[in-house]
Length: 263
Image 1 (cartoon, rainbow, N blue to C red):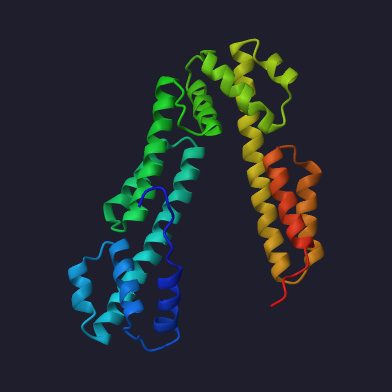
Image 2: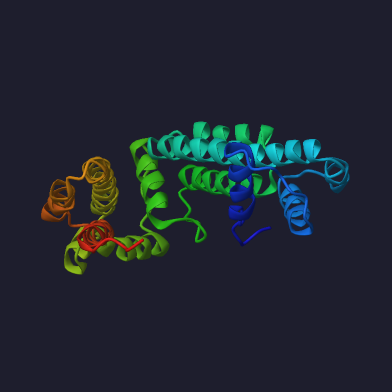
């Protein structure tokens, strides 16, 4: 399953029709094939599926179980990932990793297990970077900067290696820091540490600003106050310097300005 996203729209549509809207389940060849494929994707054996398909009652129970595993697994993983990322950003990598281990202790759906394992591997990699000070080319640039900054705050000296200098030069423009300004920072370890702090701080503030604005924008949009919703994004653009979050705010604003699609 690695490398591609699960398409659970067909089984979801069937579950909504049968389980929510009360439509009777019809065991056509197409429906049976869908149930078999989806059951395999949520770790239900072929033998159990064959037994379930012997009657409408047990087939409906099978559909309920498939959809329960998809829905509950998605909720469990999303909740754990969000909490883990908050802990990661706060410097608690051990706690973040434990949340992923907790998911793996109970999750049976292979796709969700795979996602939890990937997240756990990345968190473990960041913990290794913080412990050793050695960069990992397979990990996210700014996340590595954040843990290296945590490392310096724990009293470890910053080594201006070629890899670190390259990382800082690569990420400085993404935080709206020009080349000349970045090079001035990089004249000393203390300056490099300060540059790391500026990059990490700008992204953290930009993210919080954007998410708060998105929450207010969504509430206003849903209430029919489109001009107020637009103003939330304009307010972001009035102060934001980080290119990524400027682009995101511009895209949201353009979407609000676009005419609604005809039904």
